[in-house]
Amino acid sequence: MLIKEYSDLKIKTPDCIVGAPVWVAHFKLDNDVTQLFPYINEMIEDSIYYEKPHYIQFTLDGFRCALYPDNVAVAPFEDRNQAIGFIGRLIDFLNDIYMRMDFLKPNYKKYRHIPVLEIFKLLPQTNCKKCGYLSCMAFASAISKGETLIDRCIELNNKSDENVDRLLNLLSADNS
Image 1: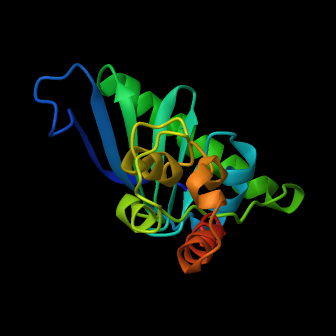
Image 2: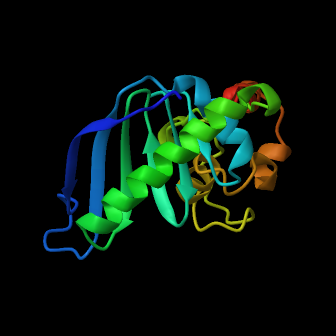
């Protein structure tokens, strides 16, 4: 068993939404769970394994989890009892993965966020809308979020210059 207990439990509404009916649970684990990240990344379809800071985000039983090496943030909960009940479920889930690691396939692919402005600076900045977005900034934002690919930019596809190569190199480093 990798995790036996948790500590430092704090359950509160998000600071940015005063009086919200949503509760977030933050707590520490008694062991580093970094070794489980690639297995969670493979097992849970919507997981995102981040390079920096090093953590994994995923949904389990309808709750959004942000799992760091030795602490966790989970939401949304309706009340404290629901949060405490889920913590037990999450710990069971993590311990189960730990026990089955030899039989599971890991996925080490990590997401590296590329700032929107970094992408935007390398686009043609014509705001031609041929990509389907209202502006090059909106297109850059969609690329950064992984919602679209750079080949949608007609202007960029018609060029062969240093910015195109730099953009391709920047994006190919993403999710490595």
